Length: 178
Image (cartoon, rainbow, N blue to C red; front, side):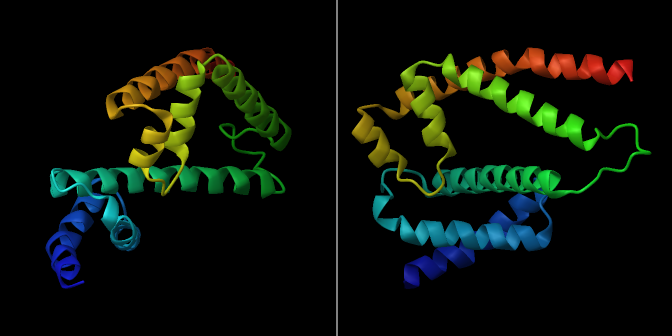
């Protein structure tokens, strides 16, 4: 516990500075640092001593930020669904039926894109979306190396991105017409 406190004292402010540098407000940065150290404490038995601790901590910080961004996007998407009406005088905002239709089209396009992935690519994508998992344990169960996982994930993200590009291009064309 004492060693853990030393790590916290040494790295908490550095992580805070990193988050603020990445554009996170101070309160959220404090919350993210706490989450990282809680996660670090819970996963302390999984840490490999041959790994560089600073690199390990930086990856945790980056992943925590990505998780927070994904979480806030999910919350925003839920709030959009709950809003009774959009402002009709703002030309940049879609009406409620248009927004719901667009969200459905986007969701359908994402599902079609995921359906085109290989089983390994899809699994890698699913694993990347799971918070608080022991990645090394999952990779061992799958019989994958870290490099294989990264390769599957990169290919999956590239394929999904390519599949969704026409949807976003169509949205741009639609906005230009308005």
